[in-house]
Length: 366
Image 1 (tube, one colour):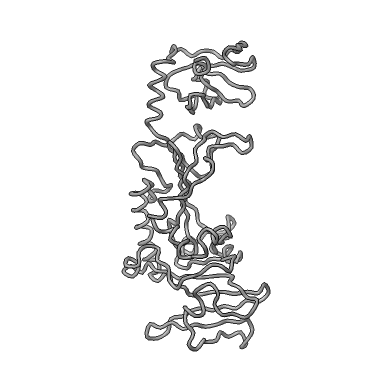
Image 2: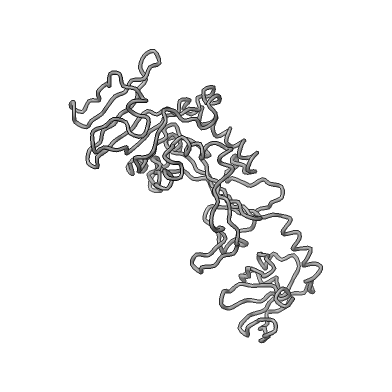
């Protein structure tokens, strides 16, 4: 199905058709929550055909409805999944800047009208309908996905079952089998969605398995808007994330957005990071009481060897307000990370020639 995604999102060489993309592709939102910092990734569109990895079928024991709820139901979404390491790391250097184990929250912030999956497993059990919200809300607003198509393959040939609405609000099932019957689809008399499309193993010739599964949003574009509105409201209330802004923002009053220079060591593309205000205030207060130095900038000097302080002779020493063109990322023993350009109170900091990072001299000698 790579050709399908290529048609929907042809790349930079062609004009993007937003309406077409939104009709066929879901939008994913990722939020990382650690000890006293939060990372918000930019929302991004998935491929037109969503791949279901093997670990997902094991995690949800083949229950596709449960997997879908984990990406759409705010109660399940908010719990997130525990990660083994924080994103504050430098893989190239093999360095970690936070020992915390964050929670990763991932969910569909927007849903398409035609939702397509590639199972990559015979163990998935696909239900006849999916409810992104509650069943009551879905029936009222059209926020319901109906199973409308399933394609099977043996590796070289494809067979497709699909549902079409007919008179009296009924649904008929048709089968397409390549050039059999001169390439015409055939009506399956007595066929139903439950019999020929839903479940884990609909009846197909030996050697065939599910290749593609397709759901259609009953309420169309209006239901799409309803989903985003509902999801944005719940996300703001439960997770303090505002999805209505061009770039999702974290609105918790105890947090503030960090400068790009402050997260340069572990910066992830297309993301913003927030940290607790209280932690910064506590550090500023401690600095004012114990580490205050004259406001006149101190010139850069070479630190002399001092075994008692644990300082090597190749460590540089400077004030915490270096020239704007300098790079002075402070990663101090006291646990504070900041940019030397923005230190509220000047302190002497020292640079390690091995890792090229700085720490407060006062923290080393205390």
